[in-house]
Amino acid sequence: MKTILVTGAGGYIGSVLTDLLLEKGKKVIGYDRYFFGEDLLGSTLHHPNFKFIKKDIRDIEIKDFKGVDAVCDLASLSNDPSGDIDEKITYSINHLGRVRVACLAKKAGIKKYIIASSCSVYGAGDSNSLTEESKVNPLTTYAKANIKAENDILPLADYSFSVTVLRLATVYGISKRMRFDLVLNLMTLNAFKKGTIFVMGGGKQWRPLVHVRDVAHVFEKVINTIELKKINGEIFNVGSNEQNFQILNISYIIRDSIPFPIALDIIPDDPDKRSYNVLFDKIKKFLNFSPGFSPEDGVKEIYNTLKSGKIDNDIKTVTVKWYKNILEAKKLIDNVYLDGRLL
Ligand SMILES: NC(=O)c1ccc[n+]([C@@H]2O[C@H](COP(=O)([O-])OP(=O)(O)OC[C@H]3O[C@@H](n4cnc5c(N)ncnc54)[C@H](O)[C@@H]3O)[C@@H](O)[C@H]2O)c1
Image 1 (cartoon, rainbow, N blue to C red):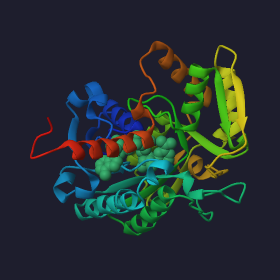
Image 2 (cartoon, rainbow, N blue to C red):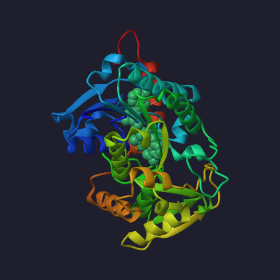
Image 3 (cartoon, rainbow, N blue to C red):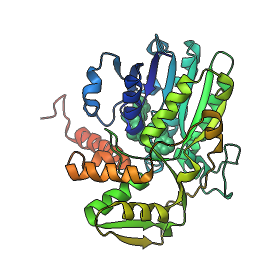
C-alpha cells in the first residue's frame, strides 16, 4: 500500500493522518473541499509525496483514484450540530457522498477502503458495555447518516475490495485544523481562558476518548494489515477501555493537569442527550491497538500550545459556527452582488 487517498485531508484528523502517512513514506492524495482553508496544511502542501485535490466528494470521479492503493474516507460534516444545519445537505455528503466514494473506489479497482464513522451511533446507549454488535441508537442526523453510510458501504466488501468501518471515540489533542468543539479540547480551553470548566448535563454521561495521533495510527494499522480476514467487512470501535470516561471525570483530569487552580461549574442541563459506555476489546484483540497517548498528554499539549500563542479559539475551531458563518457570508454577498459587480 503505497499511495493513499485521504478524503477530508484538510480536517482535524485528516491533516494529522496525512502527515503521519507522509512520515511513514507513503504518498498521499489530499482530497478535500478545504472548508477550513488549505493554507493550514503549511509545509505539507509542498511535500514531494503530497498531491493536492480541491474537490467535493459528491463530485469524485474514477480518474481521481488513478494510482491509488487505499482510501481513507474522512470527509463529512463532522459533528452533530453541523449535521443539524441542513438535514438534506448532511445526508448528501455524509451518507450519499461517502457511498459514492466507496462505490467508485471499488469500480476503480482500489484494494482497501476505510471509513471514519463515530461511536455517537450508539446515541443514548442503554447497555453498559457497547460492542460493535450492540444495537445502535442514533439520535441525530449526523449519527443517522453515519449508520446509513455504514449499511450501504459494508456490503461492498468482497475478496477484491476490503472495507473497514472505524467508529471513532471522541477525539482530542492538537491538530493543524484545531477543533475546540470536542469535549476535552473545549474544557481545556475554558480552563485556560476562564479558569473554569463547565460540565454540561451533570457530567454523568459516558464519553470514550482517543487521541488524534492514535486515531491516525489506527488508520495506518488498517492500511498495513495484510491478513484481510481481520479487517475486511469489519467494524471497530476505536478507543480503549482505559479512556472510557464519564464527563465529570474528564473535567477532573483536566483540572488536575493544569498548573493553576481551576473551578468546576456543573450545569445540570444539556440539550446533548448522548451517553455511550463503549467496549474496545475487539480493536485490542484484532489490531493489537493500545493508545500511545493519555488524556493528560492531550491536556498538556493543548495547554502548552495555547500558552505559546500558536493557536487560538477563532471561529474556524468551532465547526458549526464556521459552517453557519459561510452560509451567512453567502447571503450577504448575494444581497449586494449586482450586475456582475461586488463593489
Ligand atoms: N473528531 C472527532 O471527535 C470524531 C469522532 C468521531 C468521528 N469523526 C469523523 O471523522 C471524520 C473526520 O473528522 P474531523 O474531526 O477531522 O472533522 P473536520 O471537520 O475537521 O474534517 C472534515 C473535513 O472534510 C471536509 N469536507 C466536508 N465536506 C466535504 C465535501 N462535501 N467534500 C470534500 N470535503 C469535505 C472538510 O473541508 C474538512 O476538511 C469525520 O467523518 C467525522 O465525522 C470524528
